[in-house]
Image (cartoon, rainbow, N blue to C red; front, side):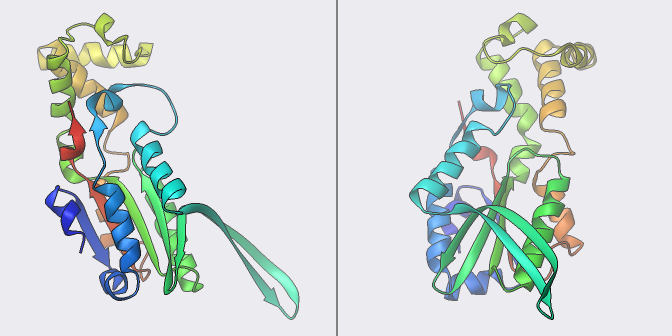
Length: 242
């Protein structure tokens, strides 16, 4: 399954019979998801640009899923009633949900959040699956090759655009005083502006405590989300374009 994106370098991991469910009951869901992921491109400038909120890549991916394919945000409300009296009500909001004839698919995109968001997503999937509400839970995140090569990509961006001092970063973002201090320290330790800035920038924006493949793999290997069928997809470095 997912041969097209695997050829492009994407990581794909299926757990707890997710592959069998997709292959036999929800092939359309797999095809739709693959069709969107196959088209992903991230201009290197988007990795560099500052600002809060979601990345432009995430916005494009969400728009394609929701507006074109109907994978819409949904708030699941689960109420426990005992002897006619409501005892408990729990709400679980999932960013992308689609109901198919033989099951319901729930999907979260974790491009660059704090890594505890994985715990939230996986526990939500586990509860919703236990209640018989969803058939599969999926997470799309930064893949290992992208995370491991982020500094090289950012340094290449600096070289390509002849960025050799702080002033030349202004078209893309303005570092805060805290970030400037980090950059200056890194320049001294790394021996050049390009290497120092790339090191400080990636450590600050895409550090180990953010959502990327190793952090997700650690959690599922410990059983977080078990026994919900899971599909995990890692976006590779190959999607970054100059």
